[in-house]
Amino acid sequence: MRKIFNGLPAVLAAGTAVLVAVAGSASPALAAAGTPGSAGLGDRLYPLLGNGGYDVKNYNLSLKYPAKSPTQTVTGNVTITAVATKNLSRFDLDFGGDNVGSVWVNGKAAGFRRSGDELVITPASYLPKGKTFKVFVGNFTATPTSASALEPEGFVSTADGTVLAGQPNTSHELFPSNDHPRDKATYTITLTTPQGWIGVANGKHVRDTKTTGYVSSTYRESKPMASELVQVVAGDFVVKNRKAVGGVPVRDVVPRRLASKLLDKAKVERSQIAWMTKKVGKYPFENYGSLVIDADLGFALETQTLSLYDTGIFAYPAAVRNPIMTHELAHQWFGDSVAPNAWSDVWQNEGHATWYELLYAADTKTFKKYTGFANREAYFKAVYKLANQWRAQYGPVARPKSSKSVWDVFNPNVYSGGALVLYALQQKIGDKKFQQLERAWVSKYKGKSASTQDFIKLASKISGKNLNSFLTKWLYGKKVPPMPGHSGWKPASASAQAFGAGETSVITPAQHQPAARG
Image (tube, rainbow, N blue to C red):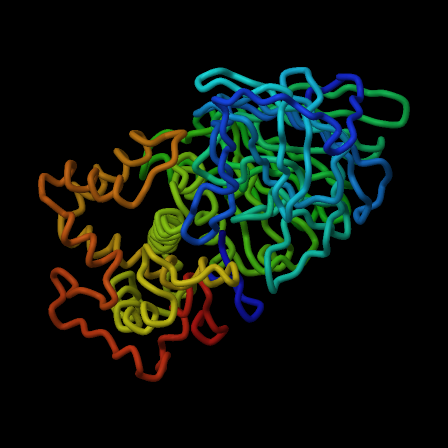
């Protein structure tokens, strides 16, 4: 995710018959061996996000958009294939949409009820540990909300259709899921839209099926994906397919009426893909591209294989827009392919994406225009000065204080502060070992969820040094440690005036005042 401040970048079982069950209609005789799965995975920041007792393997999701209206209620079905990790008498799905029509488990009607954003499901018989089961949720409905720069809204309407911006905890406002990045799964997504509209989702386009007045477009994301990274866009959009880069097909999606203004600006992603693969290795997914919407989101988002931007970002000059696009591209490795194990690990996503955003600006000789600083060293020196103030306000880099607002989690200390940790690590182990670590991280944990402790262990292994104490202080300390190789760098006190002259451009990554851009 790339936050925008003050108007500037921070830096189904498809085809199955409709099944009807009344909520709570099933009264199963449960085996004594079965116990309920937990309502939530116990994430420190989002305790009720995700659910315990099972591991999802695949989603088959279908959505129908009845009319050409961006604000309409959509109807959907989803078949979830999962494996029980305990003997389950009952389990939850996350769902914050409007209504649920029916729930079936292994072909039998199941009891269900709503409890806040929990869909509590009681199958006809308990689900044995280690066994695969299927849950079908039919005729669920969801209504989009208006896009707002103040807070991400999940399922949102735009002038031309709807999109999904689910990070970190709002994908389940559209469809039932185990909505936590610790439980990644593959997806088949079918979007049925009125003729004249199109539907686009993550991964490869499989087929289009036409019926009277409608087109159903199916996509397959065969690589594990966190629910917060799902993208389903439907509306009056066009798709531009571009020449592949190193075997990676590129497609962009923009409003039809704005295609002539937006598509040319997106094509830089082809050279960015080549740049990133040289830095960290092979691109991890089937394809890539950009989705641009006419709305005020206030951020860009790394939805898997199809990064999301608003027209505000695409209105910036290339020196600003291109590093932001690199940030979202870098997330395909850092945050998408390697997902956080818990939301406290979000610095792994944002710190790395910020690192490559800044490196790209330097390599393309636009660093000063982008940041207002002469070079990366001057930038990180300014970030270092602010480090204790950020830790006091937001918490340590790998332990944000609060999730009251999404911006309490996605705060400057996980963006620039996370990149500062990587700078310190590079100073500690040297550039060669650091580059080896970056490649090893995205290779070892490809398609998985990894923790901060996983990163510390791998850094120690690759460097040949025990970095536990060093990185623990940098990631969890209340005070910023000394910067290796820069004994003259001094942090301001936590109680000092927050920002001095020339420091506004590091308030949060890539968010610079106009004067700082030069």
